[in-house]
Image (tube, rainbow, N blue to C red; front, side):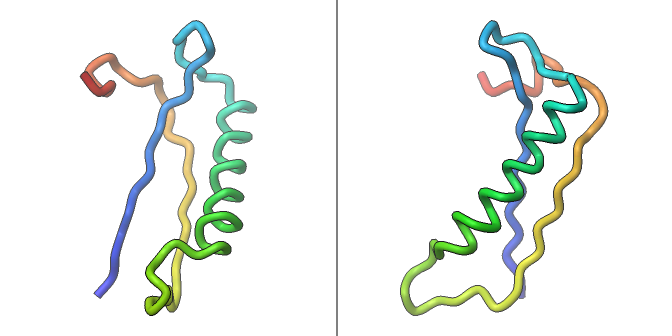
Length: 73
């Protein structure tokens, strides 16, 4: 059996406008990948008696901007 967790997020500027510049999206994807690989998986996050045997991280950038209905209430 496997555990699957999905992290999906939209980026926005300080003025709450959606961030759609490809360079910034790619930088955010790379930073997220690095954080998960080095901080979460590298530092451990499970109880001391559990080990993650294998894991896969998939990172992609989806085309389009978020709709208001995609935002939490």
